[in-house]
Length: 243
Image (cartoon, rainbow, N blue to C red; front, side):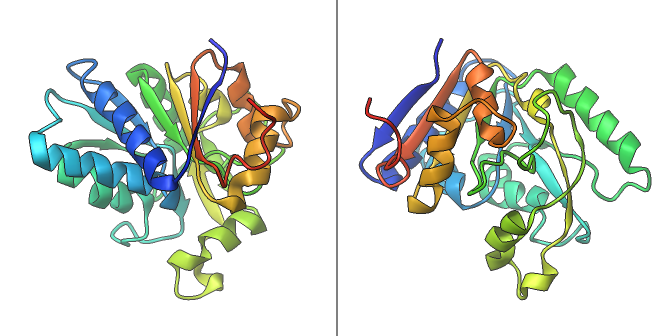
């Protein structure tokens, strides 16, 4: 199955489409494993899913949520950690108890990364939600990352730190390091939904969808996956070739 691109008129329509995909995944098995990206782009879809759950009770069985990445350098109880964000925006409102993420506080970072990699692979992610950075990154996999990479500790690019600075009081407070699932890890998911909204993502999305499959654009690796759905609004799709 080729990469499918769905262009919506507005970002809130992409949010509803993401909620549709998540609701279907939650209903697909007694204990589905859902990979969740964080940040502003998927947040609207998560909140729409929560709204539907509160209206009609979508979550049954025992689903699990799997973080793509985590900052290194924040305290475990810092509300800006990605684990805290996933609990706040998705897991707690939906009543999902099983949330898994890399241990960014372990004294042995290599062992922690290897352990999380093994856990993700064993879980078998059914649906992986991803956003895309302005430089084409997915997770914290910055340009130049090998497509067969696995979970590891990484240094964040200046572009990624600048984009994340809005969540911190001062730009210097943004962590320089993170732990991320590798591109090879993410490609193991049975299905991937990539979400992109806004004009700031237009160049990166065009590179991922229409440009060369190259490590210069990490998201272009998704074209090697057999089942990828791209949800984007017209602003993010502005530079895509006609479809």
